[in-house]
Amino acid sequence: MRASMTIVLTATLLGATPAAATSGFGCYRVNVGPSDPLQFRAGPTSESEVVATYDWNDGPIIALSEGLARGEGVENSLFDVYRAEMRVCVPANLPVGARWCPVTIFDGGSTEAWVKRRFVDYSECP
Image (cartoon, rainbow, N blue to C red):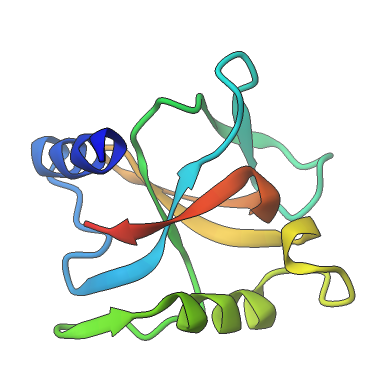
């Protein structure tokens, strides 16, 4: 619950609106150990440039960039997110947790990035 409050407060203070037109699922939270920062990359490989790094307790809003319906009154379910991940995360021949997913990070601005799916966990969008 604290993480959710932090994300909402961060979004409010920074003026971020990643999911203002959407509610429900479609966002993620960093899911790594406290001494193991997660690197977000410019492309879907571990050799791609690092564009952002966050610890497990950092509170940026991380949203799946593609594949989900967005708009006023849209409320995505976990099933909607899973189906979107199956379409947009790569490579398609691997299980979802082993795929790279396109995300948008909202932390005062917005950054397009890729993240290995197993290092983020589902979260409701604020």
